[in-house]
Length: 107
Image 1 (spheres, rainbow, N blue to C red):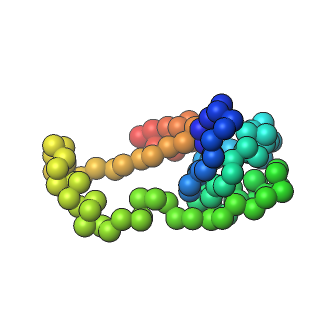
Image 2: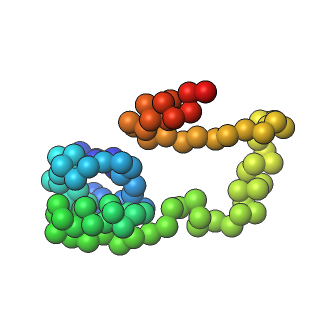
Image 3: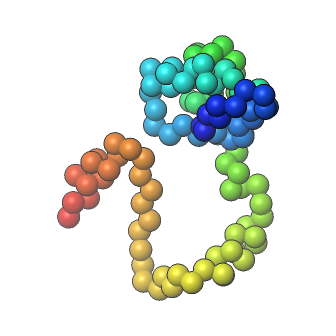
């Protein structure tokens, strides 16, 4: 979430994701979250955590990447200059998971 310091605009967040954040960490942003006029989240866990913190249950929505047809993504991929002809493994890590990944797959 990006918290705008502006007060005279509507603040709307769509399909927010917090990643691996603990409730006590998210509580630090409770006042900022309350300033949003409307927002939705991607995960049930995030919805439950925000509800516990501010008393308002966000709507759960899908990841925006799924809102357009696959054909659109295929066209974007066709424009790519990246040539990946060898087998590969794509790893997307959040925060503290890097140490776990390094230990588990160090060979």
